[in-house]
Length: 433
Figure 1 (cartoon, rainbow, N blue to C red):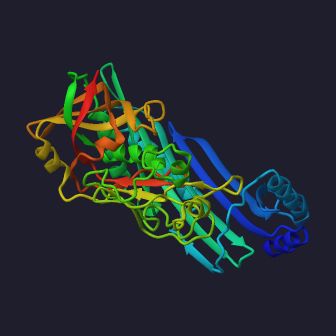
Figure 2: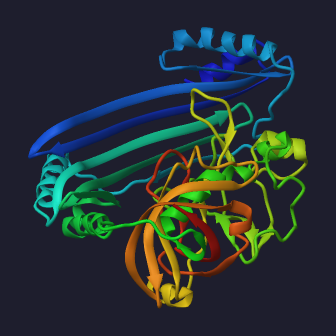
Figure 3: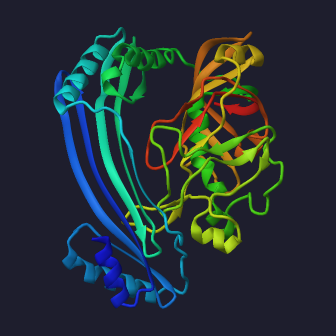
């Protein structure tokens, strides 16, 4: 199929062509009140091409993977390229390989039983008034990237996940929280997953606002991951070129105190061995000991800035090349969370934030977010707090790291990028109610 496209491209005077194919199967089952509330199984497949015609780059895609569609597909590439004034460079090395990264999978019948058991046992837990989600999901997919320079790489992988969200009630007060497990579902400890979700929700009960002021703060690892997810775009070379990142011209500058921030594509829930332009990926430090060391590049931005590409060109078969991290993370710390509270002594521990899109400014770095958490008094976690707002600046905050806990974990997978961090003690943050 791909060779047919290459031959046809030559006939149509398309000077270079890249082909990205994707095939995936996704399954999810959700239980509610002892019954299967939702059962979904989807199969998707598509083919996207990017080609050079008369020194312009054009894109096109199809979900009809039949040779008779190829003529129309490449004509669309030519039409789109004719409208462009710029050529996007393709990866021009001959590289081939096929990789497989899969974990054990349960039959669908076992997944249905697991979802029902998870929902039933969670509903029976003390103070649980309802179960919002008791879901088992899984998927597998294959992607292939090839071009007329001899590139041809294929990768197959799968995932399995259990997700639980519960509502707890005490008197008239209601709270909710969740937990998830990613991995071999035959090894899932349902009791542990339920206890995590229920205890996280239960400990929020009785929360009250607190006095306005500036306080030392520990941000829970989930909150740190959320902030990394929002502000990771500041490292995109495309944003640098467009003048929408404060990191423009800051390579080699010490902007972030003691922060170390790296992208390790071979960690997290799934390894990323090559990007969607075919370039091999590798661990890369964006910030090391506070010094900005690298931006994230596609082939195009690297050429424009006369720097080396970093393997961060990301696209679906339907889209154009974007830039995104793979597994962006802050390395683990050296003390447990309880010791971090003792280090802070008095302050706040923020466990949840809301309004990440409306309350953040990626260009300036300012954020103001609704939050929940706990008071830390005399080194101990005491009363829950809610109905507060925390405010700071991303760049200034991460230049004020005091110490990190050793509770590193990744955020729940969502899309291509995944973020990892430990809980972190910062010198201060503004709190209002």
